[in-house]
Image 1 (cartoon, rainbow, N blue to C red):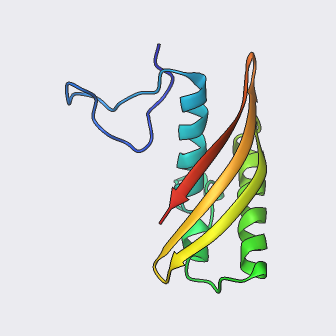
Image 2: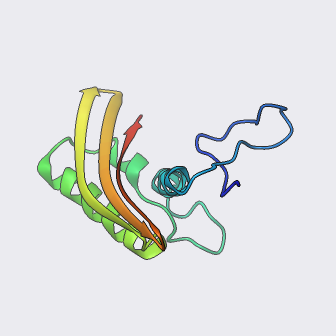
Length: 122
């Protein structure tokens, strides 16, 4: 049983279709990753869908920016993926051009519940 397109997007084994998720856990993770990496204003008819995560990459690495990122992520996830609850987010700047964001979250999708962590590096 396939639930949705797997992220990162890639071809399936036969190179005919996109690879699809096969478990609720993978589907939730893909949905969250796609939402967080979509820039606000990018989707037609849904200008508020997504985050400003890419924009924040070039902001100062201080507590104000980190709190802005957390607020942006939490409010966006609450609006578009209400079954997911962001528990914690950490930000690590590796170099001037490389950063890692770790997002801990829980989800409750009918009979499926769980606790996961997602790592975004850019």
